[in-house]
Length: 471
Image: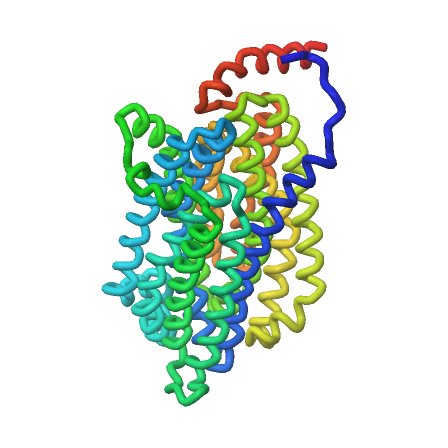
């Protein structure tokens, strides 16, 4: 490896980024748009139904936090093995990721189906909202298993740069969901009007369609890794130890962040009903931003992980620096666009009067802080893909539990401050973490390969990096 830096090749980099980011972003936007349309279609049932649907979505987000640690760990291993074309490593990593993610799905699906009242009581003290949410959860719990199954398959497909298959499956799934919503919520085409339960049935059917479509498209295209089932579960003690050592920090990050977010949601769920309605709508719109951003995050994980696995450490380092700023700039543009069209969107999603004003204020605050927040996110996903699952995890958990959560709880239950101050406190730690993330980025210490090719190249790269700093 030479010590002389050459000009960064923006053209090939942007082409590779777009090839992964655009289909994944489109897939996530489809899913989020479906959630937004769900909210719009449920809106005529009343603001209580919108609030209940939003709280159920927060329970789904907690499940997301439970399995996303394994998703991130799976991408770490699969993308690096993809860089060296080690089929055995790819298949074993998928099998372990699938098993761990489905375990989480079974736990949350069981809670939704058999203990929905308990779940709703955790999130709000409003009895009317609880009753509506229970009806939804009892049905949608069956969807959780299939939703997580499809995410496990998407992890494998994204990590091996086959992003079109989950994108097409999402299109089919979203169209199924929209059609069944129209039929079942209001009783069209001779079907009974099921209200909020109809939305849950539609979501469950769409989840099943998503799984089946991914399998059919993968089989038709001759994609091998999904169907070598025996190879998925061939693990030895050394592999299992390495997998869980790398995944444990990511898993703890997601679980502890999920618990922290649950505390935030519980706090906001004790605010007046108009604030609960505004939060439900905001979470849906936030999902649009996160869904769009997740395309770039997945692309970063694959592009960085593939380079690290193949021993191209300088390329990974240079790509990472540019990804952080590029993604933050894109999110700023998305935020400006969303705020520009806030009025028709918020109105169509049943917000009016005080709830509309609350929704606008939340969007304005989030539009500013999310640029920094997504910068932290891309930092952390980049580090994870390169093998460093510890640094970002420690920062996020420490600042969440030492600074952010105390500020949220004290401002709400001790000082009784306005809801928008409580909401602002949810992001009070982001600027500090961003500064620390930047220092770690330029140190290069986050590059920690799991493949032999990457490990062999590491000493030379670190020597080159230190030599460059001295000059």
